Structures are given as structure tokens and as C-alpha cells.
Image 1: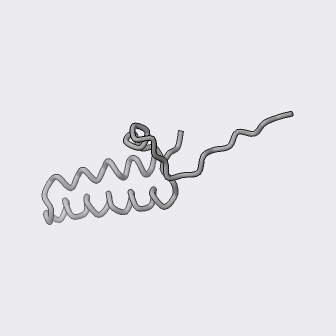
Image 2: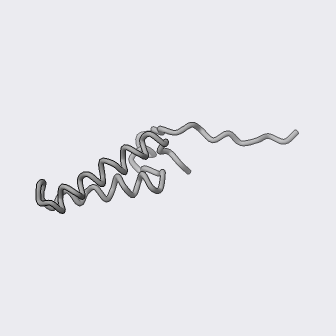
Length: 67
């Protein structure tokens, strides 16, 4: 189930990529590889922390009802 919306997704991928770039350039050290997590959650459109906290940044999917 998706719980990461489009804007949230783009911000996660951007922030994660920036962290990795800064780690590669030795600006922030190896902890910048933590940027892999927001990239993964952005690409998969699922954030386990959102599930635990009961949050979502995308619209709720509506199920069609057949009469």
C-alpha cells in the first residue's frame, strides 16, 4: 500500500541524493549514505515510519463499488 505522495516522493529522492553526493565528496562523511533510505522510500512509495505513526502523504485509494 502506498503512503508516500508525489511531492513527498520527490523531496525524499532529492534529499537522499544530496546526502549521498555530499558523502561521496567527503563533505559530510560516511553517514551521508543514510540517504539511501529516503531514496528507497521515495522510489517504493512506502515509508514504514508513516505506517507506525498512522501518517500518509498521498490520497487514500478509493475502491469502486459495484451495484
